[in-house]
Image (cartoon, rainbow, N blue to C red; front, side, top):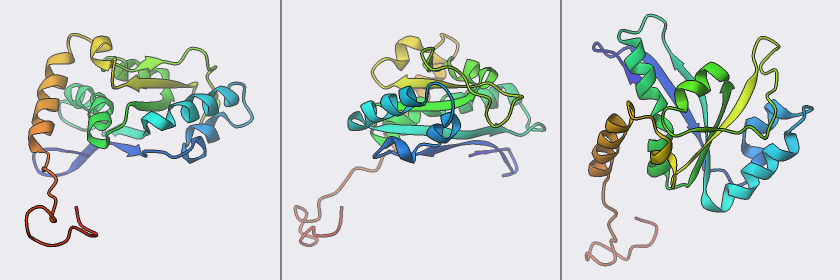
Length: 176
């Protein structure tokens, strides 16, 4: 969620997962009854053992100040979500103009799956993937400094895990 200077919500991205199977993904609903559904299932299920999340409902308010900077920041959510959620893969489905923005942060369009008219005929929804092992190499040079700086901030903000059994505060059962 993105807030403006007075605390109003002006944008955001929803992240779902990590998934246990492809049926949890909204993407399978988007491709149901369309060419490419078998590939959507195979791609998601094939990555499940390494961890898969889905980005949905990215938005930026039309009246948001510094809208260009905000949409650039929101496009960096996918790489950060990979690290924060401890997964290797993320994917998103959206219209091409949205995916073009997300591609600046290491997302790769899945060209083997044909686009679908979702949510209706006005749109051609496509699929994009991020891989934790390769997104830095695919990130545009204009996004990389901010992406790396934010990643360092997020890493520094992580709360270390504590084992209660080792610190004498209890038996550790049911707590971490």
